[in-house]
Length: 101
Image (cartoon, rainbow, N blue to C red; front, side, top):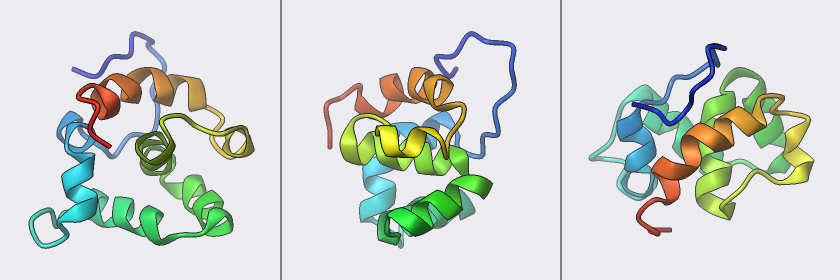
């Protein structure tokens, strides 16, 4: 179960498996080939401008990528991800729990 205790629904296409295995998803495109895995890899290829555009449709994928890549959501993306606190709260334990980056 995701570590998030609010009753507010967030747009979420990622599963706990996705969050727990983000390193493998980004590194092994032939093994992980579902839609959200493709979106995460697209985030990896995007520059900052396109990452902000992606955040309009896939805020959870952008948030997960930023947390994996940086360990947090930077100030410059907080306006693009209005629910950034909730995403950090529920994603950080999954993405960073093993210290694999």
